[in-house]
Length: 85
Image (cartoon, rainbow, N blue to C red):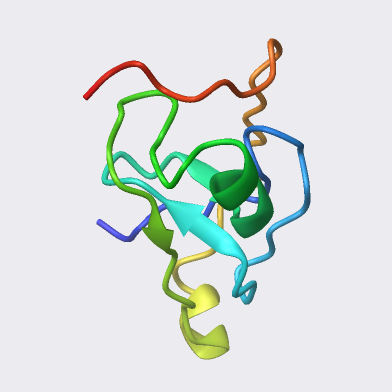
């Protein structure tokens, strides 16, 4: 199963296309932009408390058979630093 490449930041709704070097993910594939991760989230996922790391870029030719997700996820209440650990 391929990594789900979500199309946006869950905090601010910034577009994060598959080729974005700004996309950050946790082990559950929650997705955030680098700005929200560094300024709001202290490098931790607000959903699970896990580490957020740079999302790998899938080669364009592989997107044909393994396309990026189009489902946008947005935290309606905005992002607050996680209390989970």
